[in-house]
Each structure stands twice: as C-alpha cells, then as structure tokens.
Image 1 (cartoon, rainbow, N blue to C red):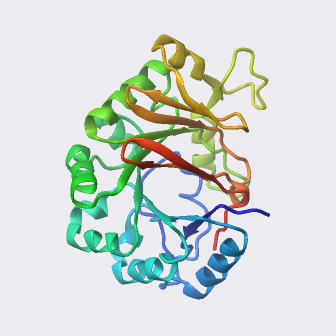
Image 2 (cartoon, rainbow, N blue to C red):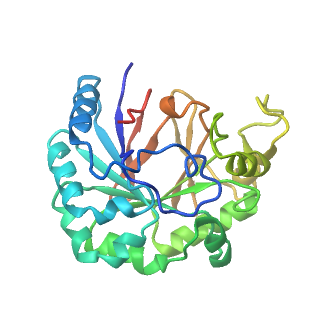
Amino acid sequence: MEVQCLRVISESVTCDAACPHCPYHGGKRRAEVDQFDFQRFKRARQFALQSGAVAMEIDAKGDPLLGEWTKIYQLLSEAGEDFPQIGLITPGKGILEEQDSFLNLIGWHLTNLTLTIPHHDPKKRKALLGLNLDYKSLVSYLRDECHVVVRASCLLSQQGISSPNEAFDFIHWCRETGIQQVVFKEIEIPEEGMDQNIASWCRENALELDFQENWNFENPGHAVFYVNSLVEQNHVRPVFVFPWGETVYDIDGVNVVFEKSEKNYYGKFIRFLVLSGNRLYARWESEGTIIF
C-alpha cells in the first residue's frame, strides 16, 4: 500500500460539532480514554514514512482536540521534521477563542488549515454546522498573522450547497472572505452500525457528483449535482488535469476540486492542494489513510 498523506484522527477525543450529516457523529468512540495515544501515532507515522508519505493532516474532531494545546505541540514536534506539509482540519471555533495558543502552532511546522464550511448563508451554516463564525476575521487572522494557506471543505447536500448556482455563490463568498482553495465533497453514506437517524439523513440528502452527461451512477436514486453546469455556465477553464483524470478548476480566482466519496472510510482518499503565493504546486493522494 502506497501512502502519500497521513491523516491523524484521535479516537480518544469525542467530536463536539453538531453536523447532522456526519456519519461518525453517532459512531462508536473510545471517549473514556482521556489521553492522546502517541505510541500508536509513532507507529502510524513510521509506516507512513516508509510508504513515502510527504504530508500529514490532523483532524481536530470539531474543536475539542484544539483545547489540548500541549498535545498538539508534541504531535507537531514529533512529525515536523518528517513531513514538509502539515495541515489541520477544524470548524475554527477554538482558533478564535485561543488565538495566542494557536499562533504558537505556526512555529511547530503547521503550514495549511482546512475550515469545514457547509454554506455561505449564515442561517444555513448555523443549521448545518451548529455554529456561525466571523469567517472574514478568522481567515484574515490565519492568512495575515499566521501565514498559513486557508482552504474550505464543503459537503454537498440537498439542505446545503445543492446546485451549481449555489456552488458558484459559495466560491464567490470564499474569494471575498480570503479563502484560496475549495473542495466540494459528496456526503458519505454511513456503514452499518452507525446511528440510524444520521444514516437516514445522509441517504435523504446525498447528492451524486456528475462529471459528464449520462454518467453511470452507482446509486441512481440519488439527486445529482452537475459539475459541467457550473463549469459551462461560468465559462470556467481547468487549471490543469491530472493523469488520473481529476480536474483542478480556477473559478472566480479560487482553485476548486470536486471529490467523490469513498464507501470504505479506512480506504478513503484524502486530497488537498498547497499554494505557494498564488500558484498551485502540489497535490497528494492517500491510498489507504492511516486511522490510528
């Protein structure tokens, strides 16, 4: 198994986000464990390095992991010399509440940050994410004071971004907010054993990404999001196309990628872009994400 990106998810931290669409919100957790398992992380890191990994992403599980600043410092110091790119995935609430603590992370090799943002409309953000932040101030702080690359991750859903027009408005809002990159993702349908209310919500609100007309869908009962409609209506041209077919678009001055969901979470693809100035220069793909 070749691994280019190590994704770090602590099973001992329970997510505090209120996203109704998250299939892992109701999953089994080892919440009774009150410490970060660095021994398991070291083993996962070693395996990732032996497989050729060049990047690492830390999933903050909403924001509670951000409250464990000492553990995050140790995590970054353990990995900073091994991985040239280290990113953090979070809604961002903990960053605003403890800016001084977060700023210290920059000295420990943190290079990019992904904000989970379900919609550009404040009311829909509140309904889907359970919180509504001052994103303009947050992004300005991250870019101007912390000097990290900021991207947005948005799940397509029938209650959130559900059409090409809405997606274009979201991209425009991201540009105005100062966000440099956007990845739109399909909702992941939960495996058996997950909370049935969440599984039902996911099935009812999922959108299938269509990259071409008459696409042969695995789940033809799902509603469809037509990527071509967004591209053609706004005269969008690709920045470039990777050999495996995935396209990076420049839409309204923002680099945009559309990502298909993977059924198996433990083999899920992790994709992210890294900018140098305003130039896209790298992309990694994980074949078999390490969940430790």
